[in-house]
Length: 450
Image (cartoon, rainbow, N blue to C red):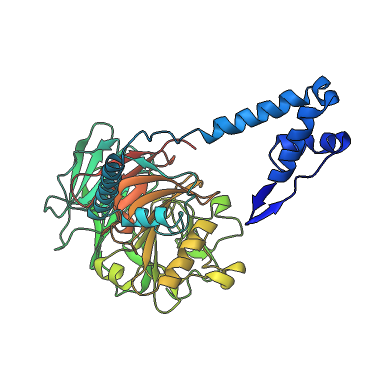
């Protein structure tokens, strides 16, 4: 008899057939102690069980049970004290990483990591494929520091750099040789904040909040210098005749979409598809748009209201849309902004609708953030990538985003702090990206091919 719960329970007598039916369950330890004892008693006295080897199986099981009961837990590789020390060291390492992120202005990237990639990167990144940190391949020794604007000629051979080193001039540099070719005079008290080349590279225009100056680059002579009207405003100038040929209404100029240059300097609504699949205009093209590869400023202009163009601060500093006609005779100057259709309104075709989903998402996030939220985007001329400067988050870095997937593929080692639309630009083929850094000379980033 066995005891269970303080009571004796009888050991059943089993037939051979009952033992055979229960032997598998017995072997795997699934029976009660009384059934185990009954089976073991039967196989010891059953000749048939002995012939069939059931006795050996029962003895092997009992021996295995005894051996398992004698097994003791293995000794841990590390003692408790050692484990505690390792844990403390890991905690210190994590703390150092957190401090480094904060000190170096990388809190946005940290928040993105902690939130599975849905914050800090504008919701554009994929946490499964993090952005690659990209460092400048060249620091052009053009100036020591403090440039106010840059512009690249259409053939990528010459770079115009305004200001820098306390000088109020515009210097034309040979990019391949890092050599100054021409120094152009600038008469205003502040250096230019907007620069544009004519398509043939023969003329250069620069502007600030007070004046526009146009140079003939073959001689370095000033062709025309004139004052600018109070923003918001648009003007079309005939440089040869030194006359104003058009005064478009800044509040409605782009209502019908992009504008196309006419032979007489007139700006008319561009035909459908004039911007091509990219959806943005490029410098010195026959089409003018608020969305341009030269840089577009997106900013909050009130509760749930977003605009693209020149903000009040931009207009005050002289940030403006400068665009040459294809022949280099007419120049458009515009200090204006246009409303952006975001959210449900963006689903319908609109002149102010963002050109792609990346910018549309960015505009929606700026609308939600409100107040001083803003960003600058520079569309690569090839139309596959866009450089994004999120100025809503202090210390955020310039990112290169793949337009098709919306994924941040590269993060540059330059922050967006104090950047303007004319502080960065793409080369004509989208292979290089130029930036005026917060401190130091102009940086060049080589962007790997898609």
